[in-house]
Length: 101
Image: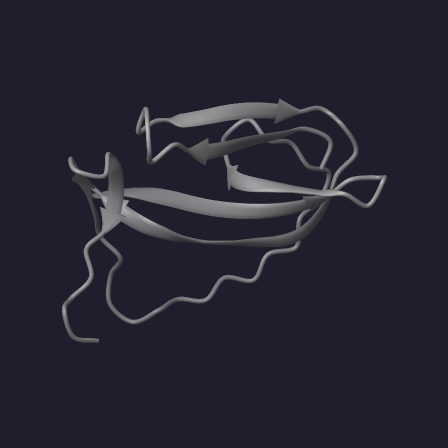
């Protein structure tokens, strides 16, 4: 990657995301997440771990506006649907999972 916009959610104080843009040469070490639906629209959610040239590592929620030359991705379709709804107590859109799997 050559530009990554990463977010971190503040559960304790503001209940909002803080974003930072990293404009440097980065290698994707891990990329995971899901694509759920909310209000009948696709809602991607991705976490990324990125390696720097000095071998240090940064990571967080990968946000729109991130730029990469190439990314290899493997998607797996799960049975059923992943649905999200806004949880006012937490301040996030959370997956609505059945009590029993």
